[in-house]
Length: 241
Image (tube, rainbow, N blue to C red; front, side, top):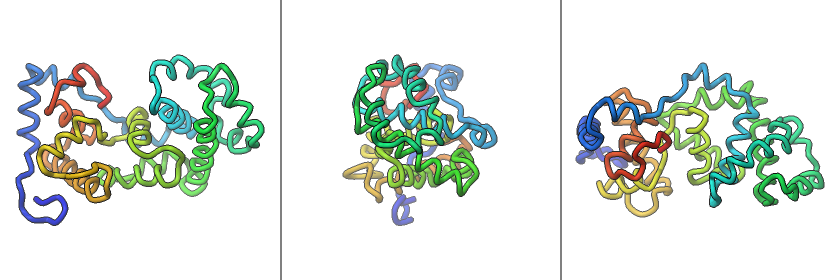
C-alpha cells in the first residue's frame, strides 16, 4: 500500500523483518529477550501526574547533554522541585523559579528550568479536563501516536523532536521512536524522503507501523525495536530504542 495515497507499493512484511532480525540475533529466544514490554492502559492510568512532569523534565535536561550526569543529579532535582508536585510548581513566582535555577545541586540552565513550570501548567490543564494526565495518555490511540507527539510539542515546552516520545517510552507508553536506524530504514525503503519530521513523513511512518501492527499484533514499541535491529547492530543489548 502507498502509505500516503493508498496506491499499491511494496511495503516489507512484518514476517520478513522479523526473520531478518531473528537470524541476526541468533535465535528467537535471544531476540525476544531484547524487546521491551509496554504497560497496560490500566497501569498507565495509575501513574501520578508528578511522574509525567518528572520524566518530561528529565528528558528536557538530557536533550543535548550527558544523560549520565542528569541521572546522577536527578535525586537533587526531585528535592529542589518538591518531588515535582504539580500544584506547588504551577504557583511558583518568577523570582523563585529563577532562584532555583541557580541552585548548584541541579543543572543550572534557566531556560530548561522554566519548562518545568510550563509543563506543569500543561499537565494541570489536561488533568482538569480528563481527571488526570495519565487518563489522557492512556486513552490515546497508539494508531495515531504522532498526534500525541504533536500535542506535546504544541502545548508543552521543549517536548518536540524525540524528547516527548522518549519520555513517553520510559513511562511505558506504547510508542515507536524515530531513532537514527528507524529513520534510516524508512529512507532506504523509499517510504519517506526529506525530513522525517515533516507532516507527510510522519503520516507515512505511522501508517507503516499501523500495517505491521495489524499483521503481527505486536506493540508499536516492539515494532520500533525490531525495525531498528533490522538495519543495524547499534543498539544490541539495549531495550530502549
